[in-house]
Length: 148
Image (tube, rainbow, N blue to C red):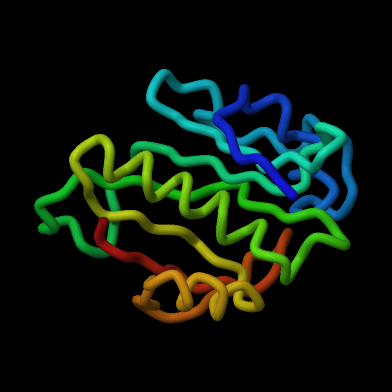
């Protein structure tokens, strides 16, 4: 059983570094704006209080649909621990982020998804836009979005 709650972003750095930065040091998981006043970070913890999933939600306009009337929210730093994938952890933290947006009047939620994660986001109602690209540090990506 897991519990999802809002946390300080620093609490997620060890998991983000392990999953998203090839096991680098926790500070390698820091991204610009992590500590912004409107940024929301959610984490899933196991029964022992260990963080097993996380997501960051940043207020940021969606560059591909600038005419969209809703506020833009970007998902960053989404990660699920080894051994917890495929058990709904990612879906629960993503739902917490979507609920956060809904509670603030809705908007457009988007991310630069690693291509292996595109099917996960598609199951949550996200659609691809634009052409895939390769980030030289972290691999192939595609941009995805959905309205909330």
